[in-house]
Length: 249
Image (cartoon, rainbow, N blue to C red):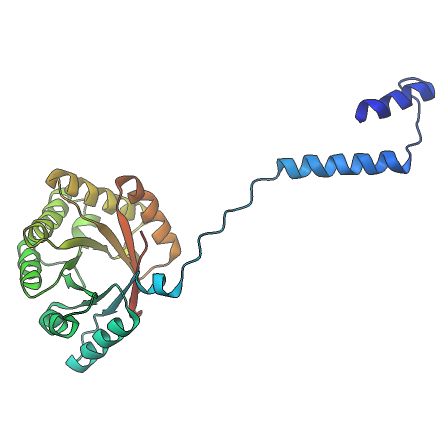
């Protein structure tokens, strides 16, 4: 098309001559420019697959960790989890036995936190807490990492902390997760926490199935997911005031 127009120009008076373009020529040029621009545009983002309400419900851990939670509150929590078919309930250790009784016969799983909320207990205490929760019916354990040890770069203590609970979960055939208090960590520390967790798991040759972030938003989830995805780990996202936590992968 461009060569045809150049040929018209030459016929009109050489390389420096002017040429009158017809309306058809202009339309052809406009169409060609449009094609070139469209060809150079980045591909449109692929829309994520739609999730049905039932599928979404099965990704939710219905959570109640408030210190003022009562036995009646826990009963309501379990009733809601069964009614909406949530994946699990997540509670403090003192309510594990009650939840096991309330959830009997339902597909809802039972998760218990360990070392919650500060993570400052010794590894031995966390392991003992995890073993007791598993004996009473917990099938999943969410342990809070030792935040001070992480920030101090005390690698040995971080590994020992994770190992103690993972061994307890291995013995009790429970799923293990590690909670990072992301609001207290820099991005570098969040990445290092994920790497510590993976290295601790590798040394044990056992699976810590997920890492869990608390009190932050999408950017932290994306950062952690990017870090742990090559290690085939998932991320569980939660917020301090939210009754629901999401199993993101």
